[in-house]
Image 1 (cartoon, rainbow over the protein chains, first blue to last red):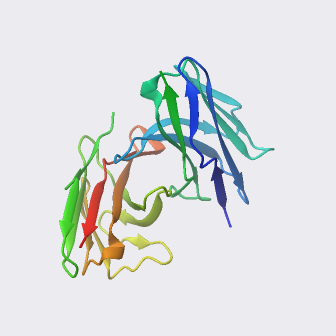
Image 2: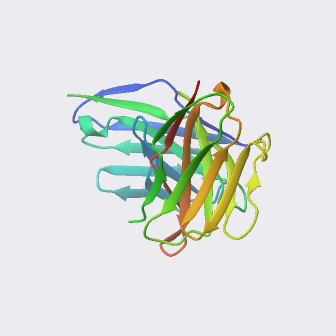
Image 3: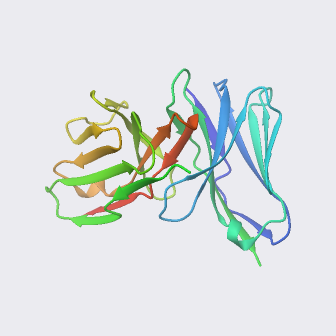
Length: 112
Length: 117
C-alpha cells in the first residue's frame, strides 16, 4: 500500500540556519507533491506544490525538491526564524483522484 | 486567497449526544469538500469526500451511519457525529478545493476540537 514517511522526531535548529525536512514515499508514483504547514490546534496551510517534471520549486525562503527516482522530496527553509516553528506535512494525491495521503509531519523548532 | 471556515472551533458534549460541525467556503464555490480527523501526534486521516448534490463517499473503516455528511450547497458541508462516544474525541478538519484557482490545492478550515465526556 502507499506509504509516506516523514521524520517524526522534532527538528531543532538555530535561527538563521537552513532547515531541511524529508518526505519519503513508497509504492507510489505521484504526479505531484504538496507541502503544508500546521500550527498547533489549527488546520494545515498550503505552502508549495511541485510536479513530477519539476526538480525544484521556490517561494521566498522556501525551496522544495522532488526526486522521483529516490521517491523523496526535500523541503528547505533558508534563513529560518522562530516564526517558522511549526509542523510541516507532505501530502500526495492518491492515483487519479484529488484525495490526499498525508505524512505524520515533522515538528520544526527554530531557536532564537 | 481561498478561505474555509469551520464552526464551532471546539465543542464538549456528553456521551450519546450528536454534534454537528459546519464547514464553509467563504469566497469560492466548492463542489467537493473533504473531512479529516487527526488524533494527537498523528497524521490527518481522510474520513470522507463530500460532494454537493450527491452522497458522500466514505473511506474504508469509517462508519457512514455514525458520521453523517450533508453537502447542502456549494459553500456548505456539515459533518454530524451521531451518538458520540469518548473515542470520537478528536480534531476534525475540513478542506475544500477551489477549481477556479487550482485543481490540486486544498484549503483547510481551522479545525474543530471535539471532546466527548
